[in-house]
Length: 173
Image (cartoon, rainbow, N blue to C red):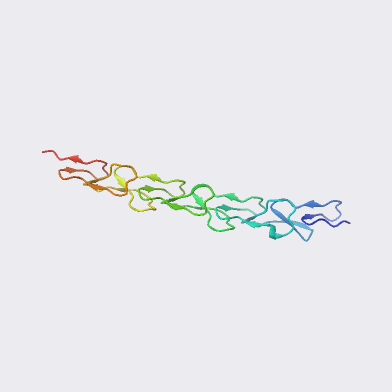
């Protein structure tokens, strides 16, 4: 009998040794064990559980025996090392692929849950604060004419507007 090299195993009566696959490690020269979920191992022939490394923030490993950590998709994030999955960004925020946190939309912009970007408020609406989930409608007597407004302006004396207006209309004599 020949002893197997570190990172390889053989079955009883075998004439050769087999390297442990990526995503696994050798345990007592008998078995190749899978790295647990949340960890991965890229190379063949690993010889201890220490070879299994945590997925970094912005990535995840959902199954055991993985050889790669997967980047979180746009609109999701993972904050901690060893994540099993990614979490959706809340409304009013967004993320890009592989992000470890979500970024708040700036004032004048909004987003829904799981967004990869923020959209501008349309004329007649506004978002006064960062992290807004929806645009507010300008009240009657006020307007916003630009996209991405952070407030509404008062109509000038002698003019009026309905709620949600992008312009004011002159009062007729």
